[in-house]
Image (cartoon, rainbow, N blue to C red; front, top):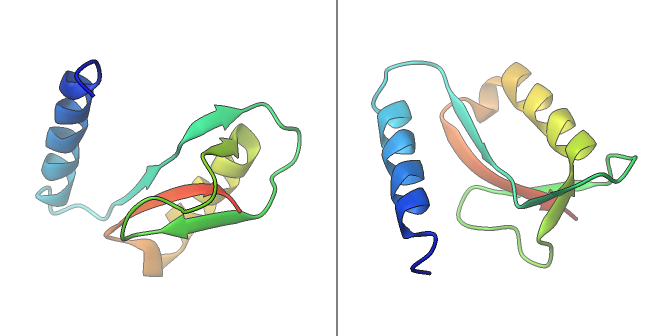
Length: 84
């Protein structure tokens, strides 16, 4: 989309810098955030977007980010997340 071109380019550059930083990192790419009160089941995909869902609750995103920060298997992983 033409409207999002600059934002997507900025995001891509930011991710390239994180990848090259030499730091211990995990990138989480959420879709549209909702105010749902619960953290429904969360799906993740490191090879593209999560299929079948285009939302995640803020609570669900927070839960995933905390889990990713504590899980060494997610170090160096860029993952899309969404409600499953």
